[in-house]
Length: 172
Image (tube, rainbow, N blue to C red; front, side):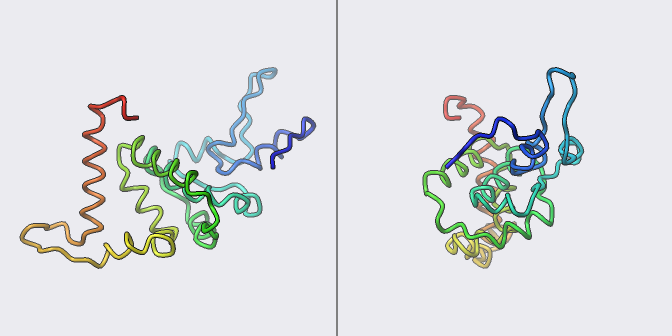
């Protein structure tokens, strides 16, 4: 349930956001950027960092959002965000919300493999997608697949598919 608070201070509202990079605000009266959590610095450094341990865990979908942001924008996820995300229970998330994040990861990214790597770093693949996680130990014939295991091959394929899909703008 979402309730609004018209008297909430700007910093408190920004703290409710998931990542520093989307907690930025612009005060049109003073013509100033409001950056309470160093979001501008994180954008420059290409880092996805959660703002607050307590509020971040209120919505487990944020784990998937971190992965799709990493893939779409070529950012890395901060170690502290990876650590917190890896402790969260994602099992109760509605499948349609997860699908939306995967759609963004796969269809709006120039390098979707970064999103799979992020999900792996946050321990999501091992816990929730054992069939994908198993690809990491599924070797291929080196004379046909010098890249190594099937997981690496799948990441190469989805990155190539992302290159190809650019020729079909209606899909996005």
